[in-house]
Every structure is written in C-alpha cells, then in structure tokens.
Length: 310
Image (cartoon, rainbow, N blue to C red; front, side, top):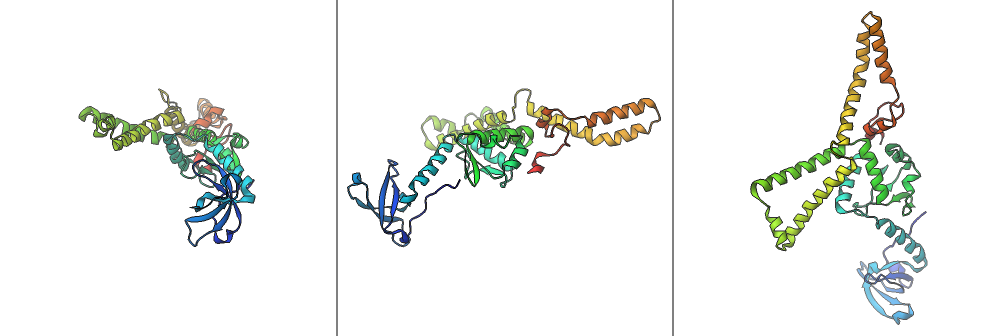
C-alpha cells in the first residue's frame, strides 16, 4: 500500500482544483488555486463549495493539501495515521522507549517514528525483529491500527510489547538506565533532607509557571523510574537483577568447563572420569525455555548476545 501525503502548491498549480482544509474547524472544501506568488507563504484561492458563496481569499499555503482528484486517498491516509496516533504514550514513556530502542535495535531493523511522541514503531525488517524479540512476524503487525507504507507502522501497544521483549531478554541496558534514574532520585531526596525543599517546589505551589514546569520535569523522572521497573519486571527481590546474576554464573560455568574437565581427566581414577562425564553432560544439556530471560536461545543453541544479532 502506498499512502498519499500533502504537497506544497506551486505556480504550476494555478487554475487547478485542490482540497482545502480549515485548520480550526477541520472542515474540507473544494477550491481553485488562483494565484501562487514566487516563494509564497500565502496563496489566493477561489472557493467552489456552495456554502462558501464564491468566497475568494488569501490563505496560508499549507491549507491547500492535495489536488482535488487525490482527496479520497489523502483522507484515508490521514485517517490511518490518526488511528495509530490515538495510542500515543505519556512523555516519560516515549522518552525511555527512544533511549532503549536506540540501544537495542539498529535503524534498518526498527525505530521509533519521528521524535517518538506518537509511540509509533517503524518496522523495516520484520523477520530480523522477530528473531530478536521472539515475537512472531504476524503478531508484529496484528494490531488493528497497524498500517503499511513500504515499511510497517505499528502503534504504541506493539512498540511497548517489542520494548518489553528486548528488555527482558537482555535487561542490562534498562537496568543501567534504571540505576541512573534511581541515583538521581536518591540525591534529590538527600538534598531535601539536608536543605529542605528546592525553590521551585515552593514556587510551583505559589503559581510560578516556570517553577511548575521544573516540577513537572521532576515528576516525569519519577514516572520514568516506575516505567523502567515495569519493563524489567523489577519487583523485590528484583527478577531482572537475579537473572543477570544467573547469566553471569552460567557464562562463568561454560567458560571454565573445558579446562576443568581436562584437568579432572588427568586424574587416573574412575570417580574422576565419572565427575568429568557429569560436568560435560551438564554443560551440553539443552536450556529450558525460560533461558530466554538470560539471553540464551532455547532449546539448545549456543548463548549469543542479543545485540550481536542486530
């Protein structure tokens, strides 16, 4: 599917009919492009709808969207974007998502659309994203407000699912960011304990708009911490931290196994040989499905760092 987007009127469009959209009422009209000056910011249009009574006026150039013949395709395209944008997350959520997805995914696989405010994920390689996240390719475009325009554009619920998947497969980047935010929060609490409330907290209560804005930024950081804890399932005791420790223990075991087995086999005793056989058997045993949480590929693939697969 190829969507139709607005384009800027030029002098070549004089004398043609265009779709005109009122920025206040959002109503659509049919107009004739009368005059398009060179380097124009405003153009003169002649309204053709009966209810506009032949009105002629100078208007901002961006109110003319597309040639009239393309209006239906354009309106369908706008409707698709608006439906996807309905799911937009809070500011704290999309800022954390931007930071983490940039760490986990390469742009040729997927990335947040634009500045991330809509929460829409642009998926450029569904097969690779599926391998990275363990989410089936069909599920990556299953949300009813997903649409395609060369790439797949998935709304925030899908973005959030992808984000949780990568964070729980490899919690370290999210845990690092969480640690930074929690350290900031601790320093802030210690500052209040020593010196009392900062000026802007009092100012926010007194109606100072700038103080209120700074307080809002601080509240966003608190919301970011809660979101990060949810992403890594950080309960007490923290599941993510436990799995990180398990991952390190598993890697240490795998690295030491060959040398340890070789040394044990040097001991000429049946018991030593049985111990060596047992260790090798344990190291070769297929990993359980839950091993995904420490970055391994079940059931029996070698341990691979997820970011290397991007």
